[in-house]
Image (tube, rainbow, N blue to C red; front, side, top):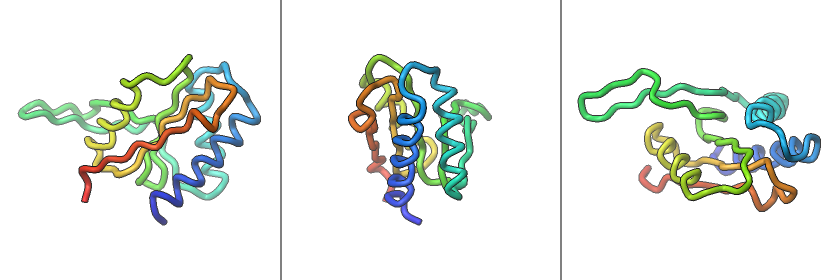
Amino acid sequence: MTENDISYAIRGAIFKVHNNIGPGLLESAYEAALAYELKKEGYTVSTQVGLPFVYETIHMDMGYRIDLLVENKVIVEVKSVDQLADVHFKQLLTYLKLSDKRLGILVNFNTDKIDQSIKRVVNNLIE
């Protein structure tokens, strides 16, 4: 299964969650609902995945946490904010680089127009 196939399923699950719940809740609620919907569809989903951070001689076993990892290929970063900021895109791109993943989905559930709040972020450094 390709990242694009997984991305399509994630997008469908995002629409389903948003249509059922609507905006205004905490990120953790959307994260749980999204993971549930994807698992229901048969996808392997890990939540709050701790990954190590290594910088020169510094090694942290748990340097950061990604919200969702789907099929061990696509990172989903869940937000519930007034609007997405540049730093949200940069955060996801950093997560992609540090985990050697190619594709990430950034979603802001705190909106009336969910179709405009789903963004794909691609790590072009992977060959």
